Length: 104
Image 1 (cartoon, rainbow, N blue to C red):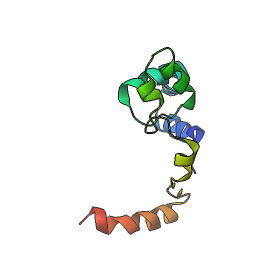
Image 2 (cartoon, rainbow, N blue to C red):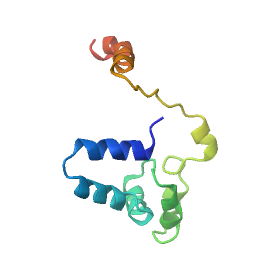
Image 3 (tube, rainbow, N blue to C red):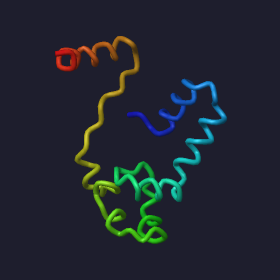
């Protein structure tokens, strides 16, 4: 399972502008910034701490109480995660399962 830290590290490794990217990610995931984004986008939030800000400061209970934006623990428990491929071989094997569908 990839964590936010894993994704962050991968993105930083991919881009030369480490200080810029690192600063952007730190900014983007601040609860007060993410609350603004969540309230505008109405899509699942990566920052649960944004929920009270959406409900309080932004006064938008419809978004704050939406399970599509802030899923409950019960809803999260129903979800599945894709397997992480840790080698080129396992990645190729996983990708080969979907190539016939995608390329048809």
